[in-house]
Image 1 (cartoon, helix red, strand yellow):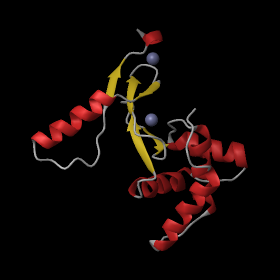
Image 2: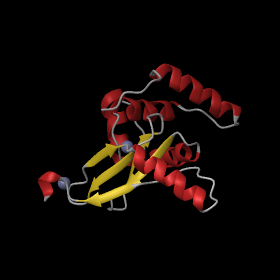
Image 3: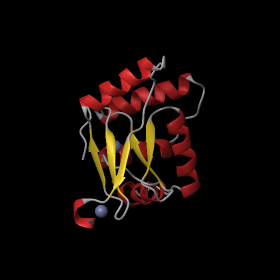
Image 4: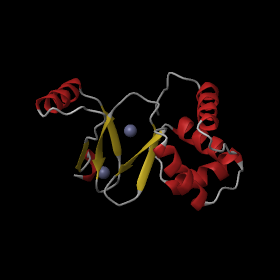
Length: 148
Ligand SMILES: [Zn+2]
Ligand SMILES: [Zn+2]
């Protein structure tokens, strides 16, 4: 369970203003999907999001809508996705501080970590190669303690 610096209402308000400014439509489905992601603080699949929106808020949202919305949110850089190796995307808000992941390929457990040395090495490697670093993905795949 993650804690974010920004409270949900402020986050949603800014998101909606941003969406309108870009000329896209806001929708109640988007609001509830973001609400689920914000409050769970987990890495959720589209199916889990669909299920939670229905369960928590009694809002019917089709899985196709969730997929479309997640694609949109990813393009807007509001969420990022992680593949635990089963080809199913798991989404989380980009609102949290940058972090990397350890993924268990047996039970799909996800552990978050951040490591200053890894971060600074990546900047160095980018510099050496005359690369302007914009983003990076670092995922360690393996077996968690209980699956070993
Ligand atoms: Zn495991
Ligand atoms: Zn994460």
